[in-house]
Image (cartoon, rainbow, N blue to C red; front, side, top):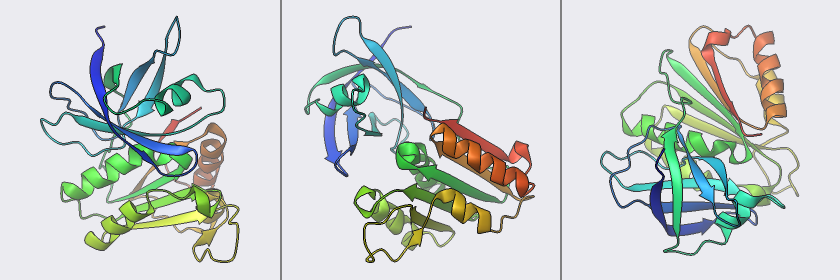
Length: 233
């Protein structure tokens, strides 16, 4: 399969270890919200390939895509990408993936931790841009106040679209200045009332979180056919 090419257009540093890269392709690059690209990590020979969800919103006949990632200690992919400079080239495969919006129920709930938010950034903004007026709810879990990112983006969406709401919950806020939810996403889910028959649920993050969420949803009698997830492990 031939590799696609792109050049780094912009890098935004969100936190000490989370950043977003925006790439520009030489030709049209169409993708569905929720899909991913597989980037060739050319740090040494032989290279390796790493998959990254697309964080940007699809634009018809556009040639831009972004991905959000966390620097992993010793991680080949995140460290090589972190050292790219604007104008540097990459090679990649994709888009691929079927973790896309189904829209088969009246309501949708998104549950993410850390950079598991990446595909939801794309899916939620895409649905709202397309005029989806059904209730869309996001639960986003992080550890500390200093780890928060994308809050301004989601706040702007909530102000513009009354059918969208979000909560950020912190498991270990550093101080009393945090006025939002505390605890893990699973703590919030346990007390959340879910319209099980009319809600489809999307989950993205590390395996342990997803496994725990699936147990909670089963206890709440959410049908398995209404649940979609993608693990980052």
